[in-house]
Length: 379
Image (cartoon, rainbow, N blue to C red; front, side):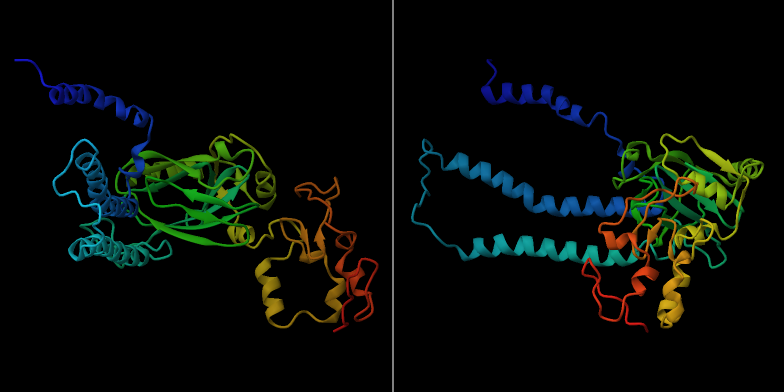
């Protein structure tokens, strides 16, 4: 019996189907098969949202093909009505189905936004185990640099570069900032991404539920070395993590302020580094951009401003108002070559920006200088 045309077409499609998966051959499915409970819950949200949307997308696509086939010119369908313009039952179906899906997606989004808030401490290790009140999270302080990652373990007293480790089934509390430009801290197997911004702190809570060696990266473009701004996240059992901790502490390298200043200079493809001791309070200084000698911390400056300023004499005291980004209150300033550890910045955008606030303060109240700037009022 000869093979019919639909049967032949079906057989050809069955043989060609694997070819449709070739574009996905190089994909990394870690987002859909993560190692941490937070990332697992986020994966479930992706799946649920996709299924809900397909409930309306697939029928619409199928009906589009069906209508085009049924009412094609040669078909001469008996129920063809060119003057048809309204059906109450069809209108209810068309609008109620998308509305119900939107309501469902809205409820899922609202609840997950609160339950998976990165600032919210974990309430469970996984779907079967809750976090006990006695469980102490592993604190890790993260600094995004050009183009590498610095990890400080304040409770353990050491630091690493481009290598992060944590024990399985212990909550991790990340405090994240950046030294120069905004990046995005992202370990796909652990949790969603969160921004790292200079002068600001973000928080991320996560947990790893199975051992493994996973990739971490910056998901926000930050310049020439961005492509290589990657690190390894190692989820270990307790004994293995204790061994890794001992190895890190055995390192003779010390991360103090002078070392930090050298480390934050732009560099690419930096191999993992271990510092057996990290200077206490270094993350606070990095966050407030006052690691370099003589710099005044931003939180101190903001507290002074909140209290009404430091008085009239402070107009001439500008040495402490520069922070690690070398931004002067009067504009960008160029750094002398003799000042090592500072990153030279372009000169001010206008001639007035090159002048110090003290020089601008000599202008009489409401008097304009040559550039049209109004002087201080003397208060």
